[in-house]
Image 1 (cartoon, rainbow, N blue to C red):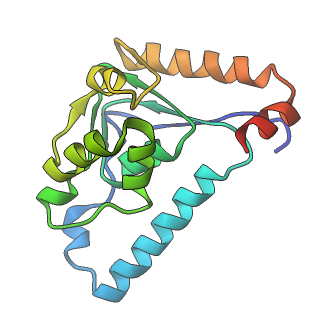
Image 2 (image 1 turned 45 degrees about the vertical axis):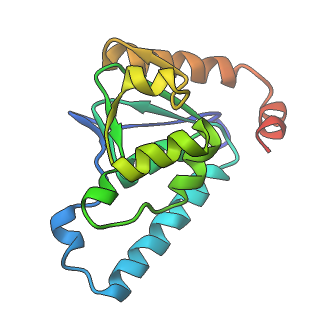
Length: 167
């Protein structure tokens, strides 16, 4: 749609996205798990290489592959009450979709390693402190309003210039 200049990803209720259902994950065969990872990596690449800017407006939980979805976006804005992390090391799984590289590019190798190896969650405020999110707001309504404002500011610029800046 040529009229769409910026894409905002967000969740409803208490989560941005909690990723895979761990109960279902345990029932997958190796081939099913491989197919799941391949699909997830394809989606991540589509977001990273999407021709228009993407913003993650993070509310509530952003965990596992849901966290990776936010990492793939160009800009991340979070509510202070957000809970962000990769539980994979605690549940005998692995990060997918290029999360380690995306995280490393945002916050550096050491901090990325710490977060992924410990599988500890962080708040939106902590995510802002380490450079994982661009801005943090008190609640989701303010977070989403800020994402819309940023999207409108970006959309006011010539699309060709924005696309050229993105790539």
